[in-house]
Image (tube, rainbow, N blue to C red; front, side):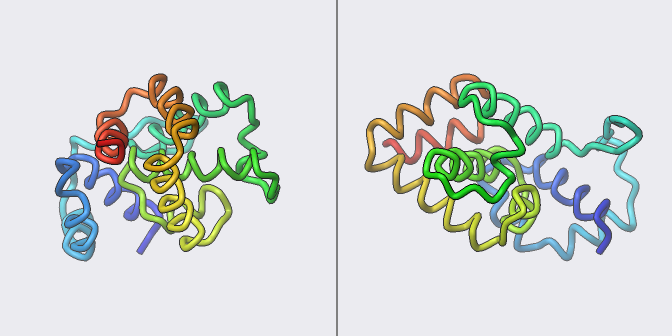
Amino acid sequence: MSNIVERKIADLILLIPSDQQHHARRRIDNLVRAVIETPIPELKWQTINGEVESLNEQRVNAMMKTVCKLTQVDWSELKGKSRKREINDIRQTSMWIIRKGTSLSFANIGNIFNRHHATVLHAVESVENLIQTDRMYRGHVQQILNHIDNENLNKAFDKLTD
């Protein structure tokens, strides 16, 4: 499957209500056929420096700019190999934000951070556990989310804090 088709599928999933996105991911083969066989004019992509940017990529870029600005950590550090605790915590939080704020798969998020999909899965589970158990961490994540306008993220956070 081509990279463009994968990106279009991820954009299609964004158009599905958030509570049904999980089921849509399981039916990815049907979406592949729909994308390949049908032109979808609603999915207008922007071109930046001659490259097509999908809806998910737009969201990821906007969210990561906010995270980097608020945490004062450079994007290259988050994608890098640093295992420093403060960098790793921000990296894991960023993975959780991308997972809950987009329709990207664990593998796609792993590609963004140069990590394996299992690393992303572990990060998402760790962040959810910390949000539920650590008041200071929950406050830190809430501060970041206050600067990111994403309904799915807010729902996911509220679900963990109820």
